[in-house]
Length: 415
Image 1 (tube, rainbow, N blue to C red):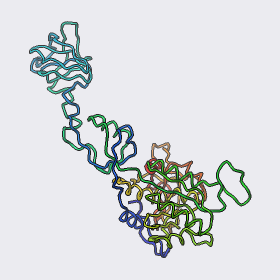
Image 2 (cartoon, rainbow, N blue to C red):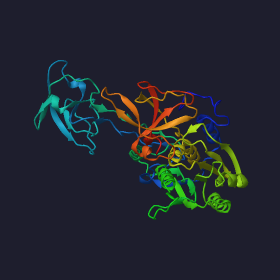
Image 3 (tube, rainbow, N blue to C red):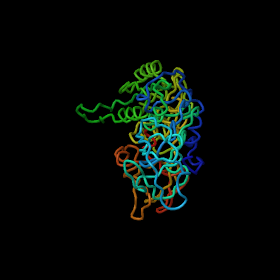
């Protein structure tokens, strides 16, 4: 998985990230509604049914290059062979069967005529309008892409639960699929709490800060392909929090909040969720992001993220994302870390598994290395913008300069 340490002995009550994810994922209920959408609208959507090809790809043997098609039995075993040209075959034209003892001018992608079993590239030939001299000895099957080499008729090309990438759109189109069944988009309600928050574009008064979490979460929900319901900033009162949560539970498939799940007197979200539903998980052995809550509001799943900007980004990417994707019906939901070289030291054993905002670079030796992007405080969001991934400081582990470190690319966490 994502770390090697598994003990939380020095942090009583904190769940390791892996254990928390098991709890979340085991409780996820997959969207069941299915809709048919055109292939050009499938990007990021999750297939609701296996997709099978009804054709071979390619549909017939075709030439891998510009050259000449012939029957290998007509070539001399040594030296060059001259054959008359009986036809010209561009791509998109159905050829006639090859006349015995002749060759055909053929172009890349064109169907190989019946009777021909070999293509030689034009660079190895000399030709006129009437005949061709093959200057090399070729093997049967050279430069021919056989029928069904890529995809065979009846084969599954994509399985249910697959999230469509751009290349998948091309693959669906290549077998003639115009529309595909996908699960309807997950609806996620997002809200931020805090009387100190104001929206960008307004004048900042003493004691206020701009609301960055709303935009970070909106961006992450959009990147994951979900529909999101923006409930804005909720005042720091129990009544306002309850009203917002009731609305979110009614309109959305899942609720994601930022702030209000800690233990302060003005943190009302956790208490309100417990009154309207339940908190089934609280506090993770993760840094940043310890005060994360999971439960339900009136039966609607609830994820309460911390209020600090970097902690919101980290916990949404690493905890909320796999849960929401599982609910959306996706199969491939957990990112795969790569091993790179650490360009920094973290000599103290981590008391919580730490996701360090870092940048993957190539050093003078050509090695992939991770460098810290700057300040790692949970309130510092700029390092998430400077960096391009997380270097993982495992629970109870250390990181030494020049030693391997696990690295998660942001590009694998924002799709």
